[in-house]
Length: 287
Length: 287
Image (cartoon, rainbow over all chains, first blue to last red; front, side, top):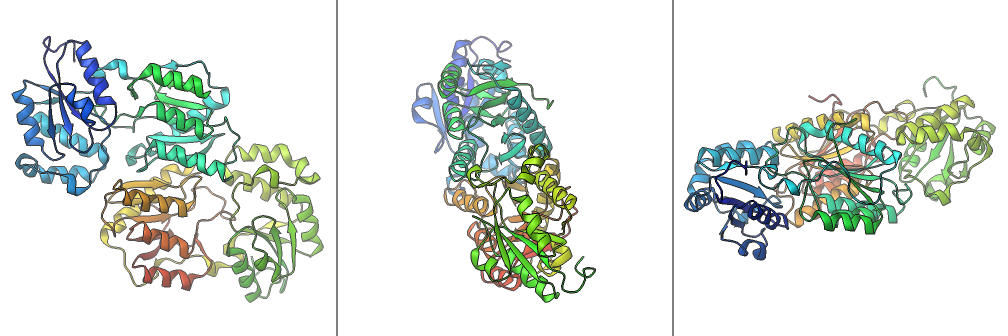
């Protein structure tokens, strides 16, 4: 926990894409910790990485990361930011990674979540503990309750509950972090495409008359996969999530409280108010 | 059952889009029954409808359908062909339908399947029994076993079993008639978009490097929703299913034996052979 770490102990941040790595670095600084950025080449945004002490690494260079992190005095690391499954040509394997390969391959077969758990175990066996966002930057997690000016209606609450039930059913299959439900009818389940594309699909199907629920009906619900290791790959939302939900004609967005990341909370709430959609943090337990 | 119907008893066929209504009419004729086509205006293909004695009806004209069907001496009806949720402007309500409206609205909230069950009950209360494809044209159902020259590998069998398990988990939610799995990783779950668009999405994600499973990996699996009324909305495949699966880089297609419709079996098998994908009918029970 940040509170237990010696004052100023540096925090290694392995940076994927998007704005979350920068937001976590800022939160660490607010707690008096020095962020050391490890930008993943091809994913991390250079500006965010280079604002702090940093190194660039490739996916697969776990040995290099561990040496660099220990050299910087880091005993804790957080993995944050988007990291789509990398094309094989982008991967650089170092010796430590190769030695762990059989274990990693076994993990990979079980889906993203188990892959990351395997990587975390490997880091911890080498003296760098993997921490989660609630340890180092809890203010980036969505709280419970309605966050903007718009309230979910009773019908929306029913759609949220239905979506959470469907997601719970999919839990064992490492898929379905996001679902769109309108009038207890599942319109979309997210898999490899990601949330924004899924919402764009709803907008397109609506334009083509293939989704006939009236505008202002339906909810996007995001929740972590059940049984998921909470130290990585939590669901996240940003302004584009809100704007795409509005474009898809939805009434609003519900995310699980305490387990959904938002980099710029105030900006996201303002976007929801502007777009006339609600944004609510809900309990993870399906009703 | 066709066998029990008096020789030559006419069969009412309510025709949605695509080639299935014509295929069912041909199958009925082979059994000595006279098909009476009821084309749904805006969905049914005029050529298929007008090849036989026919009437045109609008969605919502259940009273008109029942009067016409009884006038033709039909005591059995089959609903066949694609019928996407109709835009409201295309619906024409007659008095019988309006009288049943509260019941239909209740059904509608439960998803497509319950809507159709409500419509079936309404027809049966008015003297026209709704039959299924296994009653009147069982030769249009995919049989068990490998159908073309290509065989599923052991890995494909494992992906098929995994997909069937995921679909069984989604059964209570009236969604997920088709799923794409590669190496036990769920790449897509079908909801409002339909199978062809889902497969086109996989092809696109693969081009963009967001799906990294090598070409020739992964399966499309189609199965009826669990608890679904088998008299309508069974999954179906056609040449486009095979071609889109090949475009998506999949190893093959698995559908549930005895509950998946194929209008032109020989053509579909030939397409699979040409495209180097397997096509297999599997048992519905997840392994």
